[in-house]
Image: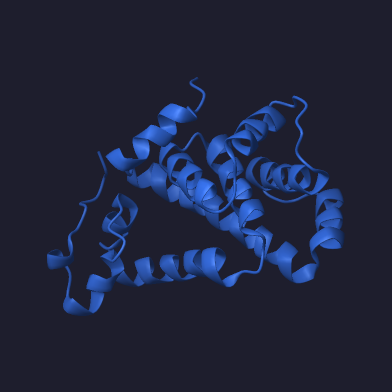
Length: 183
């Protein structure tokens, strides 16, 4: 159960009701702080719709963060979104295998994106080798967009955990299909 109330549009001023046009539990919780919710939504919207970064790579990087954080909410939502944006079930299994240092059929760029997401998540920064390789493959603008996506979703998983946001019933099948490890 969440630590803050889940608000409905009727709980908000008319000027803030747009915060719940996508009425997921995370948005319902963040609506308790409308200005913070707007800032949060703004960066998330840019990452999803404004960046030129390949959506499959973006979603795999976000999934890597969710997997490492053992975040049921983030993982389930981005399994669905990833599938919507070109990530395959085989990609998801390969991400899990790559994280466990098992061989995969992923291409070199995808493996490098996953490695960079792991570094930022576990070490707090991307290594020089990863940054240089990704900058050479993607260019400066896209490596910055990737870095921002990874860093933002590291913040998201911490918000989700701290506020104890519940996974909506509609997303539970994604957790069943691709369960997070226990322990």
